[in-house]
Image (cartoon, rainbow, N blue to C red; front, side, top):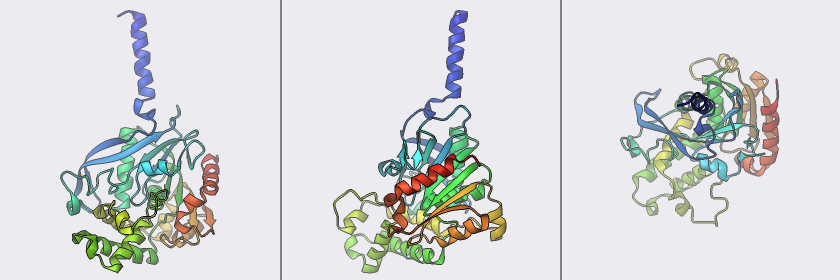
Length: 337
């Protein structure tokens, strides 16, 4: 090989190291293999895999990465389908390198529905903190990102975003929680507990024909936590819609939501003051699924930025007030302070 050829090869190798191919793939689903992933409650997810998609371009300083975790029952593809990722969108790929990550229990990442070694009810329970630890491992081991510009999440994704701020202070510069919460309010817990009982009952019955009215009503309420994946489809029998979902997947994610509490293990003020990220908390006064009060209390304690929505959209404000939210998020993420 000539000296010129060796120089060309060296340059190509350096370019590949500086800009790995996976950072340029636009929206392709990838699966990160985390091996046997230990859980904080004991046990492990065997042959653990985490699904993710990347969008946009990582800058040379590697300083423009934004993590976007999924909501209850949602997938990274849903974030795209609902128009939340893309140029000029909530997660603006013309400015940010966006990493959409699938949560355990959503049927893409390791879940009761797809686990080879721990199928169905054998799949272990996990917490929101476990989700964050798995995401952090994905960021560091697979994407080589030690810092994030921001974590942005909706609903259960907002819970994960706030847990990032508490568990890994300083790793993410900014955190945006939209219709999320630092911990479930009593009214939320009542709904989630009813949902868990309904999921257990429905999963134990062989046919939807045997579901009682209370079970069906609770399952439909849970469906409301999965933001409008079916909004463009014709109205259907609720039981037919529910048949498309895996109840054990839902149960594992819902259990994580009931246990979510960023203050766990510390006094509330001490835990709040440990947060070093700048926060934007977007809530709806009319949210009946995730109470806005814990987020507003956290914002008051930290003098954090808030966007309080008053429309009838409630928990689904990100869909019907998307432009207003996107403008606030864009201004927050682009701020230099």
